[in-house]
Figure (cartoon, rainbow, N blue to C red):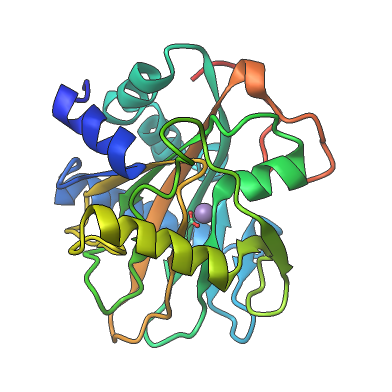
Length: 259
Ligand code: SIN
Ligand code: MN
């Protein structure tokens, strides 16, 4: 499946693209059945929330389950990534992020390259993040929020945002971006489109969200009685691979076989 010219324009302008209903409900339910089995395992690849025994992240799903392995190779995921990067890309990370009903865990404002660069020594912000909603996601169950245009600085070039290390608000520490930067980026987005200063990526299960490594995003608590589950694949050009191998394989895969 190739992206249209209009899709590419939106991606380049906003730094993200939402593709409604890319997968069918039946395809997603089959993955949810597999996910339940993976979630019940006790292993380092399952990362719990800070203040509860709920599983927050199920890592390396494509290595742990055949259906997820098939899923990451689906042309609806791989072809857009190849179309954008036009060079061999490897699977840097796969995971499913959960927010159980009425739980407080959040993702602070961050950009993924801040983490890929510092934690894994990835040289350039060229990775792409491809998410698929495994639940219906609305305004109340902790949708991913994004700031349009935050991926670019000036008229061209990828943005580099200053970061701080947040290891106290969540169980999964991230290099986060501070409030002043967020305020400035939201203001900049508002000058371009006052109705799109921050966008909550919502949609039915099966909807996809694609964004760049420098796009600012976060997600708030799930204040609803509904769960919120999102699959994600991070794909990075082989020539831009990690230079630091300290983190375990399930956080950054070392296998550079092209996707
Ligand atoms: C989330 O699952 O809400 C955040 C995902 C991300 O930071 O990519
Ligand atoms: Mn992220």
